[in-house]
Image (spheres, rainbow, N blue to C red):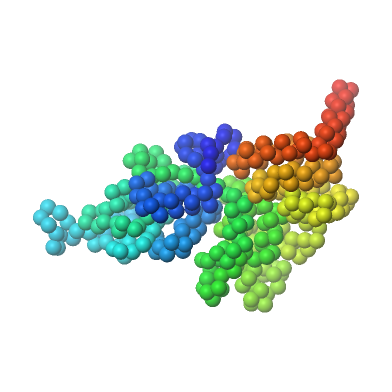
Length: 413
């Protein structure tokens, strides 16, 4: 985890504005696991994150691993009724009992009390739960000792119509705030396991599967499409970890039902989750991905696994595909962080095959993509190993020669 930097986009601006750390889904899960294992009740985790980033998945995975039952509380449901119905029957003089909702944990249960979308309710509804969050009680109701309280929420930004609880000092001091960010490495690790479709067990008749091979391959190649922030910010249907799970499920179910997964029917079904633009791009890949180059092939073993395909794309002037590959190569390298020595070696071999303008573009993006993935230490290792490569001087010499020619041409204008 680290402090965000200015200018990294809306998510980082939110973190800086509220002075809170950010972390990947896996890192946040490890933080909460420590609180669960030690029954640390003080400092309730509040996971802030964009819609579809995987906040609910954190809770589902923790619950399954620990055998805990999840009690899902949504403050938006308590705007009028309140937390319970006051009753004076059998109550000590001067007090009253509360008829506790069935969605509250029962005595003796190992459970997670989840305040999902905690900032979707009205302010007075949110305030009702202050005592449960810190004091672990509400009137005569007391939370069981083996209950972990977790809060989830979308950030109060232009994209979300929510109550700005971040300004509520009473709530702010009761929570441990942390911002969830998309992490390709974590997603990839999770997508390769049957746990990926745990929440779809009914559709799979109790035998969940990993991410569909076509979806997994597509996101591996076009890893920048894991979370389409541009479409989200424009108010369009957008791709994110949650919608890719839906597309994966759709692929399995269409295959099970005997449907053509490249048909107009399939396009409509998939585009409904990730938008027309992304849906068309995905199905074009499914129909023919013979010219697609995987970013991991470039970084893991460029000469044997990707060089031939890259040369072919360059010779056929498919520069758009190469530019897209450049972005994905950097996102893969800093997102997954394979061994720096091998990654740097393969990156240099790849750069040597690129035109100078593309080569320069890739190098200029190293710092930006590193910052996006909170990987500055890894960037240092990459740069150190780049400089040790026998052909690194050639890369720089060619770039310098090109820059000199450009400067001379500008002088003549």
